[in-house]
Image 1 (cartoon, protein in one colour):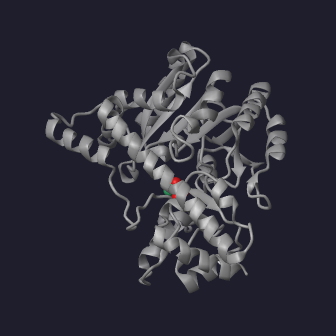
Image 2 (cartoon, helix red, strand yellow):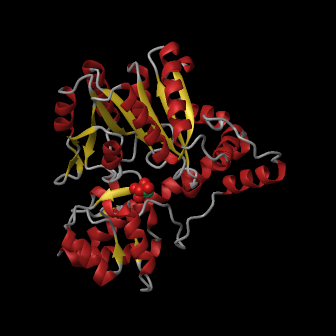
Length: 394
Ligand code: LMR
């Protein structure tokens, strides 16, 4: 049987993670996969998470099945966290899913059932897993313009022109905040224009919200999603707790659908649950229960918010420090954009030869398109990284 198969392409993010682990050079700088690291290079368990976990272990009474939609308290809390009060609760249905990627998969499969002929529009560039996932779900895929390599900002006029030309058979995959890989984000005014365009054309929004709280703050980062919710009758959203709760390996995400009315939402929800039951029956509970407990407990929630805010501020600090360190050495403003970007990533705009050179000569690792994980930078490495970038780009 297996002789019929040819090798599948490796995922470049996880391939790079293995390559970095195999490099024994002291002082290597890992700017690859999107995980937050402290100054010692560790990805700590957040203190609120640890406390919730201890409570679950000491008070838990059962490991029996929880149901196809997973942890309902978790799903309700996630809906509040991301959507706030932007949409009437009777139009929202949500299911816990195994990570943000699992949530995306559930929603893409649901959308394929709803409109098999649709095209999924993905930003150019986007998270490397978006396109393969949409193709695996059976969709045609197209790209909308997003990043301007000259200004390192958003090509907003081109983006809007493309969106304006779409219609009811188009699904637009939007990054809710903290665009991955570029770090260039829409302003509130630009979000409003995107929403007006979607409303005009009837194109269907699929929002990937993987970094809420990593950009400008929990509320600020939800601006675009909530603007969609206020104006658009139906859409879906995948959220993730990998980054903002540091629960990467627990796989905690939420698939949300918003229908025109409660009846349509119920029907779509029955299909969503049918998708889940036919794939993995129900999601694992542990990570979701941690999040539920934190979000429902005032003290734990505050502790989590404080810790998240400290992480966010450190990323902003890393951005400013790196762009200043480069400016000091190069006497140019070429990398000032790093300070303006938000979220975990920035696309530096280096060619592949320079990326390879940095890896070989300086043990500096980034994705081949020069995406760097700003949250992976320890303070003492910023100067060294600036030296390496300036000498490689001179
Ligand atoms: C990333 O983009 O590095 C993260 O979202 C991890 C992943 O799953 O790709």
